[in-house]
Image 1 (cartoon, rainbow, N blue to C red):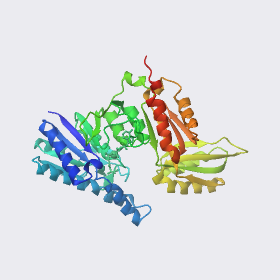
Image 2: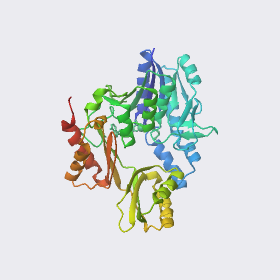
Image 3: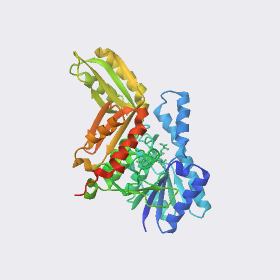
Length: 410
Ligand code: ADP
Ligand code: ASP
Ligand code: MG
């Protein structure tokens, strides 16, 4: 008998009809002799709706109270799935994060799972029930409800699969797997049959939101096999597994894009030691994660420092940058919310040269200016104008994936 964790995303449980469909899928897994633990997101649009309500009352809602509000979406979904299952003869019980319990740290709105107590789930499974757990939420050491950051139900599912030593963690979503680029933007995007944890982590952190990054980190750490597949069509999806040698034969596995960042520039900063330290310490002290950083070559003792942050942190980051700018005698702060980060990702870049040059060439051919570049062993990212994002993704997909010059057979 296998133990399967199945996670259903917002679109998959987006209506009563769809919840009935999910119940049928769960029944099928049970009828095949499996024990099943289900994790569900809120119905599609619900988390956004709840967040918007908090924002109507406050520009920066209290994080504890925000979690209290937005965690309710999942509670509705799990109750509905349990009702739908009972209706077709499958015994089921729904559990919120605190009922499990799933313990997290107290970083409200972006909490990390620390520990899962599996006793209650095991008991219910022994009774022959399907256990349906609310995704995205947990409880901290003060007994307060926390949430795990947008897309966090993926992490609930993978963490549960690790804690329960499940045979597989199935992620059911609205596309048929992980593709070489967002299939909603690139018509010719291809489903990737098998991808390494490392590549998936990189793609997720660069904007391919099909999996939340922390879920893939968890999977890599505990060796959880993930199968990403469609809720609507029955077909093999994408397996996310340990890297193997075959995988390095392809230089570029996928193209990711991210529209959720803002660029902030501190203009005409005196070019002397300690200023970058002051700026980035202030941002760090306020829990703001900085992504790309560029410092221009100095001119007559002055330089510009640009950095990118998530749009949700941009107002606060700008405020901090203005304070520091004034303190150090910079001439001002500029902000651009209309930027995009476009990245090419692949394990094969470790061993094959030339990807960066080719990427810049493709962008140049399309007349796209690059504001900043960052690289790691397995990715290259360029910051460009938001209006060129789709064009850039399509052109890079064509160059690196559709025209398969980069597949190296050794
Ligand atoms: P869920 O609600 O099921 O968690 P998400 O909206 O979080 O679904 O993630 C699925 C979406 O991820 C897809 O609809 C797709 O637009 C987007 N996506 C972005 N990049 C990729 C990619 N490389 N492969 C597949 N989907 C991607
Ligand atoms: N409902 C949450 C969100 O919209 C969590 C999730 O969908 O994974 O971000
Ligand atoms: Mg998601």
